[in-house]
Amino acid sequence: AGDWLQGPYVYYLYSTYGFGKGEIGQLFIAGFGSSMLFGTIVGSLADKQGRRRACVTYCITYILSCITKHSPEYKVLMIGRVLGGIATSLLFSAFESWLVAEHNKRGFEQQWLSLTFSKAIFLGNGLIAILSGLFGNLLVDSLSLGPVAPFDAAACFLAIGMAIILSSWTENYGDASENKDLLTQFRGAAVAITSGRVQYLLLISMH
Image (cartoon, rainbow, N blue to C red; front, side, top):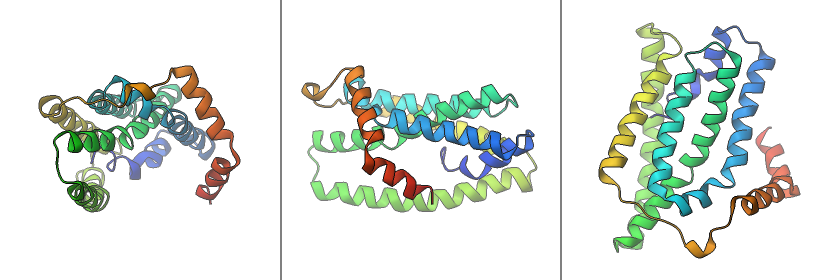
């Protein structure tokens, strides 16, 4: 919910602050670029520093991104987009890594893991997305709380999620023998980003 609440209102919020298509485009590019860059290394960092800690970092980073939406200043909003890109990278790496490691550590049956992911796709990417859209519309249109209201609601859901993580999750790590220093990770990321295959996929995603 913390993620789905924001999507429909990002462009609308920027437009109400008086930004044109060019400036809004730059803000979106900054967010996607941040996610692309940090997405290549956050998984490794989460394995080394702890996946539970990475999930908490996701919540904090995204809350800070939501807070920046209250400012009409371009530079502040740009910082928020960068933070949002980092948070998105963590969202699609740290949580699943923690779940798989915790599942195996507790000795659960492997088939349960596929059932968990299928339910997560249905509930998280389906039902929750729909309910979040309806809730966001309620806040903005029905209650007339303004375009920043969904971001405030998202921050509240993120704070609740962080409290649950801190109170009930245990920490787990990746294989220490596979950890590499940051410079090596960035070099690998640069090679991956500049490879023909990645560029081809990026071009496809833009159409």
